[in-house]
Amino acid sequence: MIARCLKTALTPCSTRLIWSKDYAAAYTAQELAHKIRRLRSFDRSEISRTMTTSTPSSPLVESSRSEDRARAQQLLKHLRATQSSREGPSAIRVGLCGAPGAGKSSLIEKLGLHICSQGLKLAVLAIDPSSKSTGGSILGDKTRMERLSMHPKAFVRPSPTRGIMGGLALNTNELTMFCESIGFDIVLIETVGLGQNEIEIDNVADFVMYVVPPGSGDDLQGAKKGIMEIADMVAVNKYDSHFEMACKKLKVDLDHSLHFQVQRYEGWTPPVILCSASEGKNIDQLYLTINSFKKKRVPDIVKKRASQNLNNMWAYTSNIIMNA
Image (cartoon, rainbow, N blue to C red):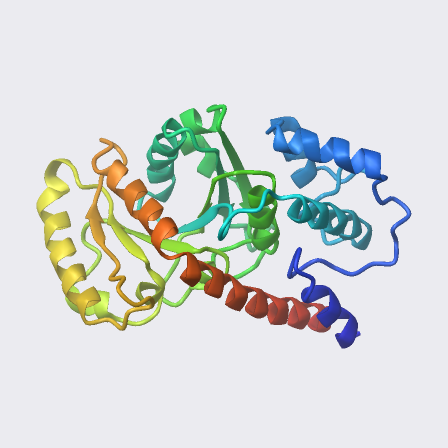
């Protein structure tokens, strides 16, 4: 059993796909080619069905059923095999994390519209907490992205955590790879509201943006270990109206703390950027920082993804063994 899990987890196309002998419902070559053409033409209904509808012609990427995972594995394998070859990753995966109420969803709305205005295709994976008592989830983050969700170059997909800790859903990694494989240029992953020690987003994203509101503590708070250590950029949101002075003070404290923090990448100190989702202030600076990181840190991104694959492999294997 362990050897079987390791064999599947080490497969390049995915690190969490369940191995299965049930290939009776696998795609024919013609069906697969037709489906990939529709996905890469950014047919929203086809993308949604592939993520959320479990049928013989459309596997549920998020499903844990072995027959669904077999078809999803086949699809992801062919998508990645037919990706256009570029130097380095074809897309950048950006994780947005922060405490509840920091303004992550509103910030994604403005940042996403700016990204789309540059002619880029954007996928947003918004993770929403599930109820511990009922298991349900409101999936309300998309309501704050009304304009972005209707933009022809954007696709917004909310997902429930289903009890998974760390701020992500069980299959966030697969959905991220799926979005990249069908041709999105940027994948934004919004976590649920996080605390200081919840850093699972670092196992999925190439670039982590930590969103903080004014009044988030002093320089000692910024020096504490945990989520600040994985941040590649800090966005001080709500830099507007009567919060401007508080935001400026917080920026000084965070700049001071990050200056003495051990650098994750040589020559890269996480910038602290004042911004406002409600007024659209400095949204362009957020995008320019992400784009600069993508262009200048390709070897770091490749190295990090290799480490992520290993971490996700062991996490997947442990999950299978514990639930066997």
